[in-house]
Amino acid sequence: MNTSDDQQPTGPDEEPTTLHYERADPSKEPAHPAGQQAAVEGMLTAGGYLPADRPATADHNRRRAAQHLSAEPPAEKLRRQMLAIMEEYERKTIAARALAGDPNPTDADPLEYVKDIAAAYSADAADALDDYLDRLADKLTLDDVRALRLAGEAAQAVTPRVVKAEADRGKKVPRIADEIGLTESRIYQILREQRDQ
Image (cartoon, rainbow, N blue to C red):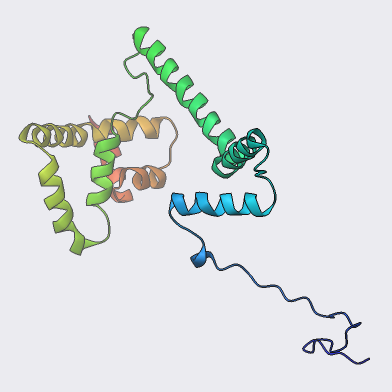
């Protein structure tokens, strides 16, 4: 007998040589919980898992099916439990450090918000600067602006001392210039001025 993959057997004793698999169409599956419940009920009934003469068995099988369908995958459950344990530990640690008098129990960077403002302000997108400044103006109060302005003046005044301290610790001028955002020639000038004082 010569049967190709596309041909089905024609005789009564011949068996098919090709398996045809039809994938279920998810769009035809019920989306509403009531429809899903009815579909599960139908599958259980068709499988003989809801015997009418044994209602206790039928109820048990319904409950088990519901547990399996609504069950969280084990890996997801473990991940969720581990996150909850870590968050609880972190909360307790922060509370204990705060009660012990730690001024920064979360180890947060006190200048994080200022650094975020600086990063957004110095971003390359000049056309987005006006939009950013408008959003920033909506967030900041006059007290905030005053504090930032005075902090900027303090940073400018302390820059020579910080540059000298870093150079005294052995940090090279190119690295200092890169980290502080000034030119190397300006760093050399600051170091000369510090030596002359």
